[in-house]
Amino acid sequence: MEAPLSSLPTDNLYKFLALSGLALLMFSFWLRDERMDALRFAFTEAQNEYRVVDAETEAMKRSVDIWNTQVTIMEKEWDRLAPTNWACFEKTYRESGSFS
Image (cartoon, rainbow, N blue to C red; front, side):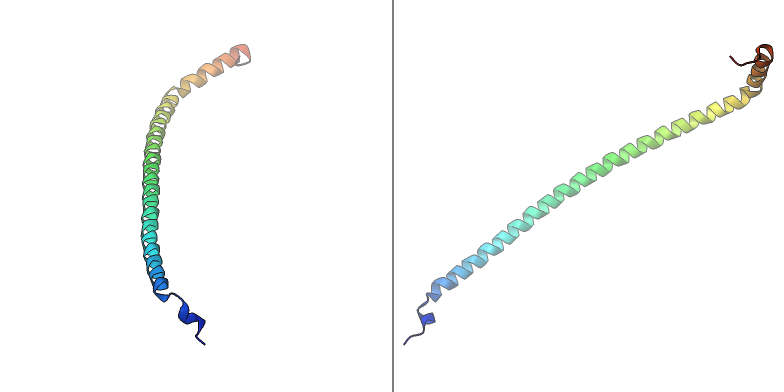
């Protein structure tokens, strides 16, 4: 009695395994390339977003510097005019009894 395994088409099985291995290898290279392309795209998008945020941050810093300069100028002007302003307020209050 012959063993049932001896009647299997071993030649075709080896060909199937070899071709399946090649197909799996090619698929893995294709999948790796697809993933790398997706990662490159995401990285480029992240770099562009970083550049935009960095530019916005620099613009905000310049705006804050301008406001700080204006506040400093206004504080100096207030210090220069404060004695005159208080004397005017005091005179108005004494004459009318209120600031309105």
